[in-house]
Length: 355
Image (cartoon, rainbow, N blue to C red; front, side):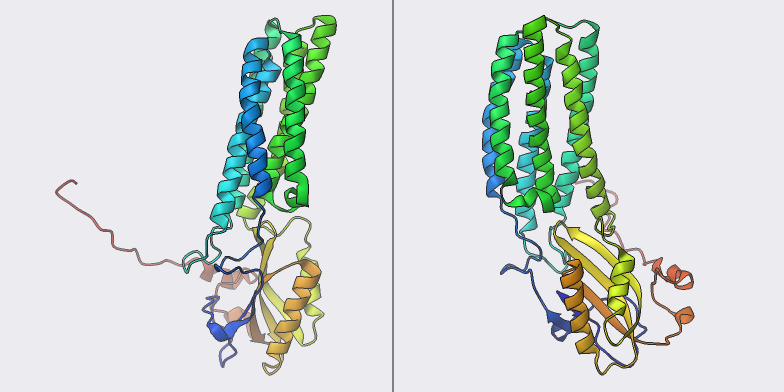
């Protein structure tokens, strides 16, 4: 989707984007409901949720019968899996809601919020595992290795099935929300492997400390995956440029388009996984060829940098930047205009009585 500011006599107006029907050059990635952004297949999440929920019950019973912390830790992690998968499905449903005038990007960021919550719950679960492992290392309790081994093997099979379902189509590679759910399941898969190793060690040697030690290993694996998810989610919420994208390279690419003399106030951010937006002021010599220049810029940004939503404002070259009266993050003298003081809205108060 590309927006342009209408050419007129004054091109040094502020950043307000009041686009009429004639301002839109072309529109892609918008469904029949008006929602902009990539469509996400929810079916793998539904299947993984069903598998995980069924086995959660099995694992809780197994942890009780075997008295295993590793199995209990895996069950606690699986409980967060159920919540994570349910949250991911809710986020997908919200993201499909149509955009409104007040929420011009709809609810696409709901998927990022879900990924952030999933990352936090993973870290909390790991902290709980570390605490329980430390307590049990002081006095390792007896563990029923046979029950532990059987349930752990069954859990491994269930986690492999869920991981395969979620990895189908590669959605976890491009969507933070799906990656959060996938990391939950993957953490459980590693947890099942660690639990099997613990069961085999206990069965062969009777060394019960293997159970809490390998539980701590599970916790470390969980934290490793969660930290990356947390960092990327926060980057999106802070409207950082997509990881790996060089903004200087984007600027150089725009300057290579014939007719473009300068680019400033260039901002690139991720709206949600798979949808990158850009806004910029483009300096040109004449407004006569602006439509052609805009089209070339839009095509280049889409083809070379996968930037789908572009807002461009044309400006005649040589505009005195020192006298800008608009919000600009490029010019220190004009940056002060970004901080505005809006008049306080009157509050509806009911004084003297209660409802």
